[in-house]
Image (cartoon, rainbow, N blue to C red; front, side, top):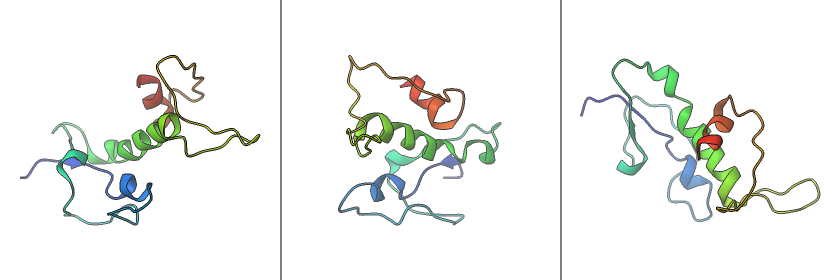
Length: 102
């Protein structure tokens, strides 16, 4: 209680069929959410600096592993495995930065 935390309320749950939460996001000073979706923010870091990290991380995860997208030729995307080769464009920003670390 009293710790600064960051979370992405509703995004993960609303990205799958039969979602228990949703729609994605919330604008509130206080909320109730599953404990495993919270990350503690260090005291010396401003919340505005970390506010987008949960969404960027989820975006990278979905792009790499969930296989929900299709290429312009209709090929299924995602489903990266241990032996996959992946080219990450924009690896110095948001989702790309987090995808490179995965």
